[in-house]
Length: 280
Image 1 (cartoon, rainbow, N blue to C red):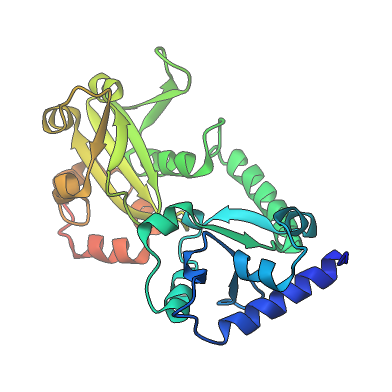
Image 2 (cartoon, rainbow, N blue to C red):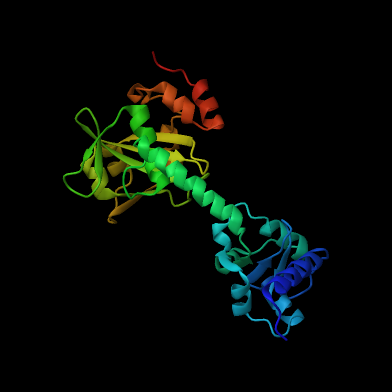
């Protein structure tokens, strides 16, 4: 029997709600690597269970109905882990999370409206010379913050495509890390870029585009501390956190625009900065 898309979606949402209302601690469904998100915030249903309920169902029908695959890893803050714990009495294993997919129905109206807003925002940022090339927005925002706070001069690169940054005659390598927390591997930076620079500035930009931390390092120190055979270096928090602006005022003298720093800092970062003894 062929089910139209609207009826199929409603059937799935109802099934997800019903499935999520009771525990399944002793079932095999916790081994699934594909779950379908229902209408409710914590409504999910294992794909294998749904296929048992709707015998003729296959993944192509779900895709045709408008469902989209998304890796669990892309959904930070997703309530799936809480749902899984309540359903199966245990947390999902890391091996499961690595291969886990969530099928969901996107809100096309919200996405369409947001795309329009983003387009307008990009035009504004272009008018104010924040977005100036093909780099992604978080990188360009972080670089613009660095320019504003430290008074960096930006010039066309003579060695590669893009721009170089300077404070006077000192070459600055600006590295932007976007996210609410740092990777355990650290911030990756090319060794060749460190060697070409005098200082390395790491701008930690939160997902809401505020500055959550800044680290200002001497390039010689970076090369000595993180020497190795690889052409890339990984600057881990535990190795450089003592140089974070929230903990050290060593490079506060490099700041030329304190107002810009405080204006774009996250509330927590601003509070920590305010606790420091500002020079001058």
